[in-house]
Figure 1 (tube, rainbow, N blue to C red):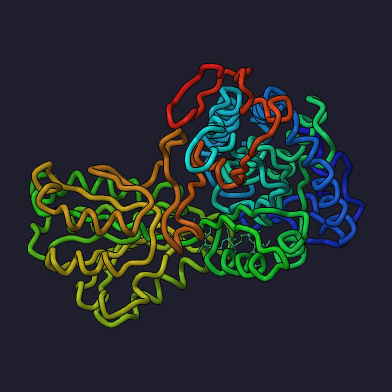
Figure 2: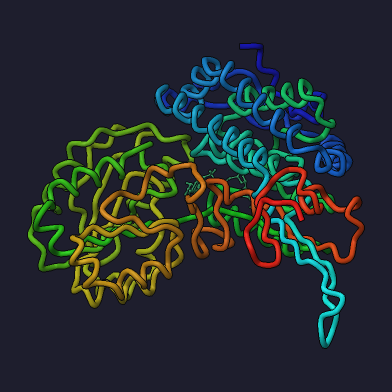
Length: 526
Ligand code: NAP
């Protein structure tokens, strides 16, 4: 591993700032990790923005094959840095090496998935309507449309995905694939991993002849560096994963600009799981085992963590008893940083104080930055009258809500927007509870049947989104190839000469992409 410098990457150069920002801390030992990281100076942030603005027309006009080369080169270089990432990542996050390596694979897989998407080319949703000059009562013009990139995008790294939702994660990969330069705001929790990956992206940009400014990585506080970038006129969209307060602050900053821009923020979710009566009778213990795995995976620090479990109060006790005994025996895990560990302790202490809430079980607290898994229960009546019970406990804790199936449906209807809604039942039950399933669909971006909410596959059909506050815009997904749509807008050309149209819309269809021609899917030339 080349020596870490602690400096922002501004285009193809390094920051000269000597204003200290942060030093990473190993959450397992509380020991600081070298080097010191420095806040990007105001003129360096301005230079990164200027470079991105100038890079946009060049980068967005490159043939897709060049962007494909760039994305694949980033993936290659990240793979080559795998050992350095694993070593530093474990130190900075407390996550095990297997997770760091797995997340590295997911990150390079995402980059290659987007490369394949733009290499094939049909993602631009090209539409062609052929002119009908003789149409009555009015002639029809020649109209052609497709998706075009928005412009420079600011990406905020997520603390809980140091690779897959950080420097070269899903937001960056989808924005670069769309043709947008990216300015990354590093997360203070894993600055070293950010620098290693940032070096890979910069090197890949040089190796493949990308314009300077296609990528910058900036260190500094969210308010000084992050908000400054969101407010900069050059920036056209924002990708964010983190707290609701952070996401909404950025939404407000973006909405207050002279030209408001979209913020795609993935924030809090409790991801309700509904256990139907027959499933509980048939396999209550097995569901409890799967639930524990989902609840404690990554020390519960997943946005899809099952934070709320609805079940009929008439159900057999097997599920509750099994989950409680498993939770009591579960080991503690080191959380990502001291702030997140403190927030988890505070949220579990707060829920316990709410009248009517019972702590069913908790693992022994190992102290430090560890989180001890916990399970609580409450009646649906109390849940319905206590909005605070919907709050996310970011970590391995869940709340069981018991009542009649009618009350449970009522409670689901009153939930805030969620990333995932899960149902366990028999095939006959899911037919019987159609209305409940519809209600859950109204609150969720993804529905899971007889599975668990964690484990988000990166593919074409994935939706990792959901109504507010799961995300700021429930019409989008931040995982899978749909994520590219967030950084594009549709543009139509009316009556343009063929030679002046983008290749995707030309008569000859030189890229052989799928298009909608007069309402019919076709790969033919006109
Ligand atoms: P965070 O505090 O929201 O920070 C994420 C990023 O946004 C950081 O770069 C931060 O900059 C920036 N930021 C935060 N507030 C801002 C503001 N008001 N204006 C401008 N930028 C701002 O998230 P976190 O550090 O990852 O974790 C904190 C808590 O968020 C957790 O305890 C958890 O409750 C929640 N969280 C939820 C999820 C989820 O998926 N549901 C994921 C991660 C975190 P700084 O460098 O200045 O901090």
